[in-house]
Image (cartoon, helix red, strand yellow):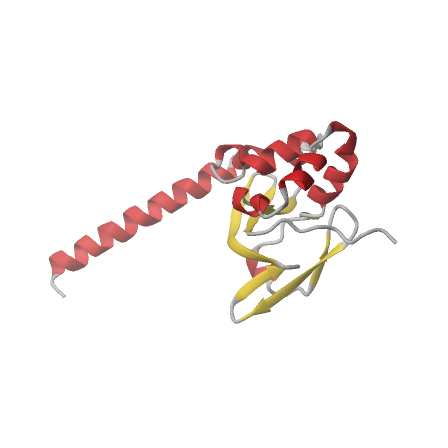
Length: 167
């Protein structure tokens, strides 16, 4: 490889690293809620967090680990179920569903893969499985990890997970 090509590759690699570092620095200065609001794929989650009255909590000191369902994940929930959850009279039920996506503490991907379960802020546990390098939380696939925020970390999942029914 010529010195010119090697030099160009180094410049490209440094530029890419700089972009990633800058993006990571941007989220590291924002709360979980601020990062979710700024992202294009968490509109339904943000709406639900507001409806449940959890903005202040998830903007607090933390740290929290949030398994955040995307807008696509929320589309898998029947429309009537989601509409019902967003009604003011179901605020407590919605809060239970959302806090089932939250674990107290900052649990990075490298730590998540060592777990078989984690206790959520809602009180119930989520099951964590790792198979062929892929991580699942209950039946949701983890599709992006370690979005570092000022008050914790976000791991993106492709499904809304529901707490077990109370006995």
